[in-house]
Amino acid sequence: MKNLKKRRRIQVIIVAFVALAVSTALIGYAMQDGINFFRSPSEVAESPPPASEVFRIGGLVEEGTLKRGEGEIVTFSVTDGGASIKVTYAGVLPDLFEEKQGMVGTGRYINGVFEADEILAKHDESYMPREVVDALKAQGVYVEPEEGT
Image 1: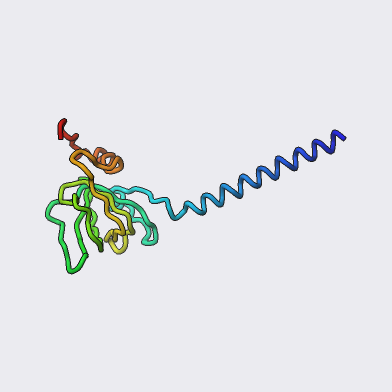
Image 2: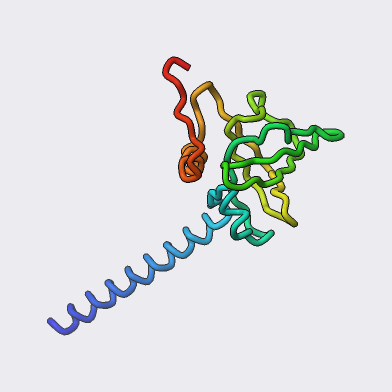
């Protein structure tokens, strides 16, 4: 009788472990497309990701690089003070998007150009995405916003 209980307990533990492993694998597979890693322009310039990888890039819109093309095509460069990456975007930019302001874009790096699917801009006078602030601080070009702005 004790041997049967022991065997049953081991079987339940094994089934629970297999169920846990399968559910973890399914969750990981389902979230695979929703995970976008952040990279600074310096990281992209140093080791360009494959064209199939979707990731986020952020920094400051470089002054003098914002050009609006025909239709909704917009090109500009994003920098973190260490490197500059050319960005193209087909769409309507956020109202607060302008040069020398923080931005984060989601897309792919293809043939030396970041092709953005989505562009996010700062939403008030003092906000800048945490990843952008960290990248700018790492390059030594981040300036703390003044109090009262």
